[in-house]
Length: 629
Ligand code: ADP
Image 1 (cartoon, rainbow, N blue to C red):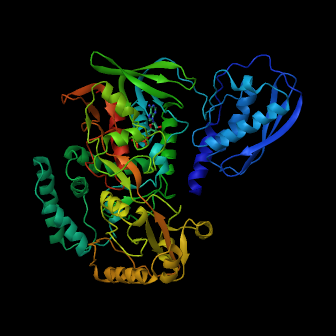
Image 2: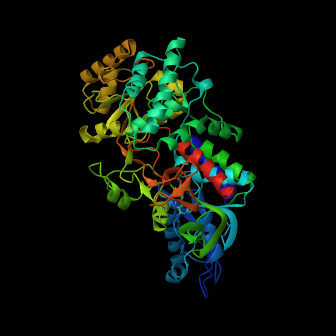
Image 3: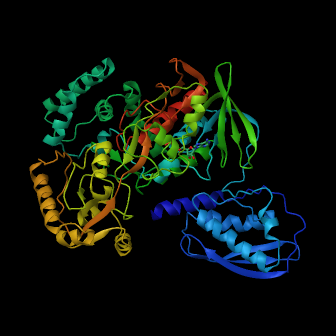
């Protein structure tokens, strides 16, 4: 988290220039002098000092605050500057730092009142928006327009620019990265070098056979299954004892985990290109943890993670690549609708950072990479058919910009929407606020009573529904010190989390049960049974992924409850990332990638498949658009 904040801080500093849009208010009068006032921010009082001449605000300084570095920087730095430059208090709150922004404006208002100024005049007039960038988009024609600056949009932009296209990327928020920035950057791929020391076991073998023994669901799937069967037979005959994996098994297993409604060719595209995309990221500067494991819902030991355990590593690398390849990025620039001409998408109308509507024409193609609709409660309630409740009662861990804009824009010009009803809840949304790791290899999930209730390496939909069925819809992830050491959580972070109630800790399992209010006898029996399963490889809940026992004190627990995480539905695309209309025809000039697309994952996205999905199809979309195909 610390690393996330520091990367974010650096990004903000690097980009920190201001947009000032309002014309200066006229005929202001004040009692010249310096005044001070404070108001409650997010973490405490924000104190400001404000200086006035007879007719202007001359300086605003934040003299004290306890706001979070990395999140509040933009507000703390740019709102005071904006007040002086624009002589106004009509300044929009910075998204993600609303309470800090409001505290600054409230304190400034109090200072204006002390100086005998006209607060209404300062609050009226055209509103100003501060931004991390001063680049204002105007009417323009380029080769490729990319809409959305998450993982998919960034990779599309880089790949189009590397192909020689003149590229503009518009991002509606202040920052790049979308959900990839917020994620752990987990990237599933077959990776023979990285997986070579991972052992196979009989439970994992039976998982392969269980999928191979299922009914075929389509001729394409049968063909894929036959390839995996051949690989599996060869693997068995070879006597190898390390993990079985291949792009085909990754595809077959992922399709099966989505109940085989995903498109086989698209899934094969994802799993076939994921390793080269990981290498592409490596070439652009991403360093990876040496150990490949299984994150929640990933089903297999093929989850790689950047060294800082954050998607910020991936975003930083792609951002640098975008800069060096000449991509022109515009923040606070929101695509409103697509422009078509003779059945071809030729551009989009964008509201720029000044609130003006401008036209961007794209000679070669438009790539839609606006993400899903996890943060749009109306849309998720409208499309949901499978969860009891997806209203505001269920939180989301998506960024606030995940509002389904691209789905609406695409549908408006005839794009075919698919799988919209399938919405993923991530089981691991923090309640107590902390946690040791998202890996399932050495985690046990217990309910409020201290009992296990599910195989921790199950599909995410199964894990989420079973968690919702527990008391208060809450469960606890139990780890031991061995896992802390393995994932390298610093001692001071553990101390901070324990001291602040983000995680619970005890030297004994009984003590840990007391800490979380569970029945000690149950917890002792639960962990004892789990440790026996680690020895035997046989588990009451048919868990297949085992590493070491939960046996090294201190023991840790953190509480979680499911939250909306990924929307599987969206625009139908083909393997070239071209958008398909409701007649099954390609819409020319129109490409889409990432969570805005719909026909890849089926009913349930496998954990760790989202970042490769966004990046593999982002790269393809950028390349195809740049070639004008
Ligand atoms: P993906 O993983 O597919 O890249 P994300 O949700 O991570 O999806 O990123 C999507 C990005 O698109 C976010 O940064 C979001 O703010 C941006 N975005 C969403 N809607 C618009 C829009 N109408 N105009 C410009 N950017 C948008």
